[in-house]
Length: 290
Image (cartoon, rainbow, N blue to C red; front, side, top):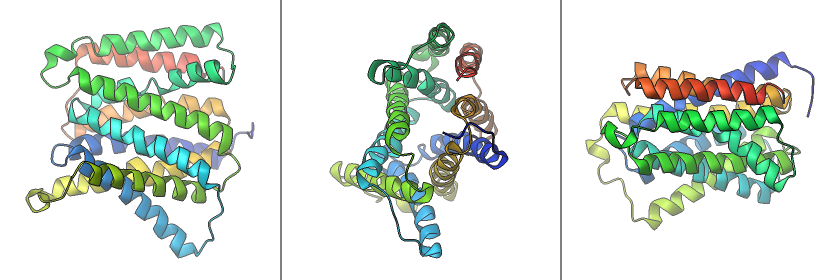
């Protein structure tokens, strides 16, 4: 990992987090009209189409290890986005972004268990603090009438899948070209989405009744939630020290919740706001020493 700070890398890193922050509210909006499997196929295949178009324009010969692309694609976007869509179908964007922000803590825990990485006192305290914030944020889920516990557990599963993705990428994906790797993992993700779609006997028989705004939301979920952030983040990861990547994750819930409010996806309740603030502060505390 390059330990010097690259201006291009920082710009790409910040842009990737902003893009993911924008993509989540669009997915939350699209799930109002599309089924979980419909949206999964749309957002991943749209993201893949943008990357494939770039590769086609450049007439590039792909060079990557497909086993790594398979593992990465199944974890993210595959399982991560599947669980995320289940969450949005049963909850709000505010709850989802707060819960999924625990990805950083799961990465630390998994790294300690399987990679023998040391968890310092600072990181341990931040993990406890972060999960405490999540507990506060979801404490009134059963009474909200909007969120439910299935959604919360789905968001937790999405965070876990994303965490394993980070670990696998850290161990095996550093030697691959950025565009080639993203192409491979999004191709795998698209195949995974197709398998889920046809395996559950899903279809688009309702396509004609879906308003254009929801089609646009699905399009933007694929663009801002898949294609752009994966390309930018993978590019930035080779130019920016890990600690900046971890710190930048703080931007996702802030941008996502704020943009979600602008889209009319609701504003956090006082407890969600308090829990979300605790989570963001704990992310900063836990990642600033990396």
